[in-house]
Each structure stands twice: as structure tokens, then as C-alpha cells.
Image (cartoon, rainbow, N blue to C red; front, top):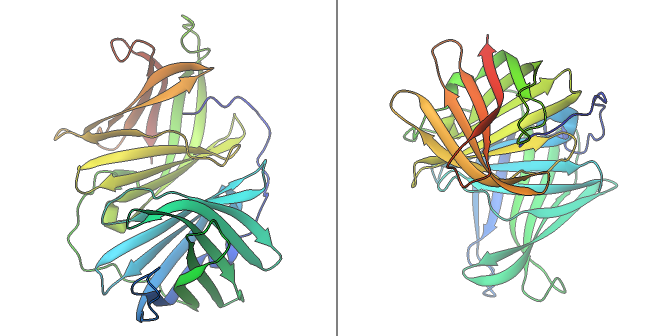
Length: 322
């Protein structure tokens, strides 16, 4: 949850994944049975639709898998302090963010590694990008069971740029909860100075927001530039089609990290309540987001609790106008 107070103006700090912006056809080669000694590969085709946020420091791509009837998404976050990338994968079948890989670019190639599991076995997973031109690129995934001494490549994607936006998949729509946020908005905000201190002093802010949905509504993203504070924030929302609830993550351009999510759902009247644990100035707290769709002018509130949700102090109120 945001507690930003700096007034430094944002500047472009990376263009590492700008090459991926736009639309691509993708040819996939995937090893059918990784880590078994098998050399049997499955080949299929799909598409990619990518854009960057934070002037390049957040990269999102939506992959379509027509034969499987599903989507996938990579969320890439650049850490402006460590100068490296963290990449998360989301599958539309679960809506859950998978364990990340982390790494950086070295010239024209990128190598990222992270801990994961494959069929219950602890592994290291790696992503790599290479062979990048104005119209093409290659991505590979590999697994290691010996701490990175040896690697088995199990997935290769070859990207070729296309001019037209890919078509949506013909699969059942699971939610449209956050589609009301799509497009351009102006936000009028009131924030409480010094939350959880008994303060009653509020100050006003304005933002310029743009919202998008992916996975035919089951992923929602909005980027908001908070002009007075001199930073940009991005909200990343994923829908779990089994639990029928949302996980909502906040990302600040100053940190390039996923904050702890709040989780919840909307009721039939368009009120959404989302809760999660966090910290405020070293104190454990509970956080609540409250969305009200309210016709043409939706509102959002953030509140903190220090007593396990018995009482709440609202510290941020927002109203959005087209």
C-alpha cells in the first residue's frame, strides 16, 4: 500500500523490454515430459500482445494459447535500486501468480533464475531472451535439479511481429468485475496525513489513470500518475476462477516490487471489499480496499486496522471521473 511522499519527477530508467511492445505471432516448442530424459516435443502456435508501463520499468504481455483455450501473462518489474528484473507468470486457468525468476540483461541477452517446483520436485527455473531484432525475438525456459550445474531446456518461443491485434479466444467469460475501470480517468483523492496517529488533517491530490483488462476481464491493470507526489503507481488484479475472488497488488515506480495483496470480491450491488495483512512504519496492520462502482463515478477507499479488523481508520478516498 502506498505511503509515497517524494516529489521527485519520474524519469525513464530502462528500455530493456520496449522491443516487445506491440503484437506478435508466437511459435512454441514444448518438451512433453520435462526431467524424464524424454526428447519428444510438442509444437503449437499462439499470439502475444505486450505493452510497458512506468515508461518502460513495468512490462506486461498477454499470451494466447488457442489450442489449449487459455491465456498466460508475464508481469515484469524493474528494481531501480538493484537494476534487475523480477518476472512473474500468471495462467488464466488459476489466476494465481507463480514464483518469480530474477535477473538482468547483459548486452543483447537476458538471463533470470528462480526457485520453483515441478510435479512436487524442487527445481531451479530459468528464463532467457536472445536473438532480438526489430521484428523477432526468442525466449527459452529451462529447469535444473542440481542447483544450476546443468539445465534442460523445455520450452522455446519464437516471436515474429504482426501488424494487427490478436483476436480474443472463444472461451467462456468468467468475470467483468473491473471492466468499469477500462479507459482514461481523472482521480480526485483525499489522503490522511500521518495515519494511525489520531491525525484529522487531510490533503488533496489529483491523478491521471488508464485502465486495461486482459484474460477477457480476469486480469485488470490500471496505471495512475500522482502528479503532486511525482510518482506513478500501478494496480495489478488477478481473478481466481475457482475461489471466485480477486487478489489486488500495488506496485510503485519508486520500488518496482509487488506489495502484499488484498483479497476479496464484489457483491451483487457493486460493492467490493478486499482485505490483507501489511505493515505501516514497522507496525503490523490489516488493510482494506473498498470499491463502489457508483454508476459513472466509481469510488475507492483504503483503511488500516491495528486490532485485527475490529476498528478501521480510513486514510485515502478517491473518486474517478471520465
